[in-house]
Image 1 (spheres, rainbow, N blue to C red):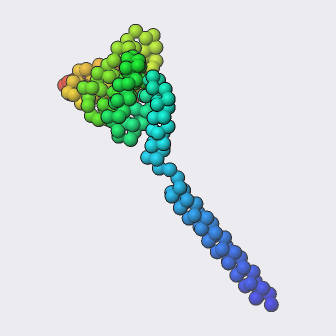
Image 2 (image 1 turned 90 degrees about the vertical axis):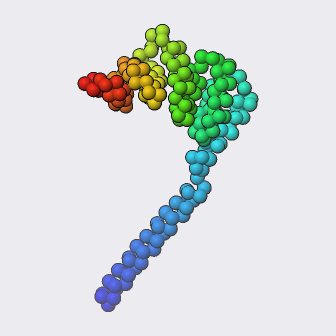
Length: 194
């Protein structure tokens, strides 16, 4: 009698564990299915944000900040001409809008139109030449870095080196800027400095 009772208890425990495991696996499978079929993709989120910003720009067409935000989302969606149109409108409203100039430079870099990127980034540098916070701005550090990359891409390593040096005045530990400065020095034949 005790032998059969022990087998019965083990049988119940093992079946309970099997049923519990099946329920856990089933719930996991259903959750995964619902997540992937009902969650919006990144593209959907960008489209929603674009639609929202287009509506806001329509309501307030003279707001350069909204136009820059919309341009950034157009750029994310690889709609570069639309992005550039929004930036140009923002610059029409405020010709020294640094966010617009930086975004325009970023778009041109993405599009591999380096001379245009240089023009845009150089304007940001010019706007900040007398700023007492010039060497404390992380945003300006990024501008110098990308300006240096653009000069490397156009075959101007001397100008590139100057920009990377400026970036390193702001963030001396920027590994990318240090590396790119070395690349510029190599192209200039200054291998010891590299």
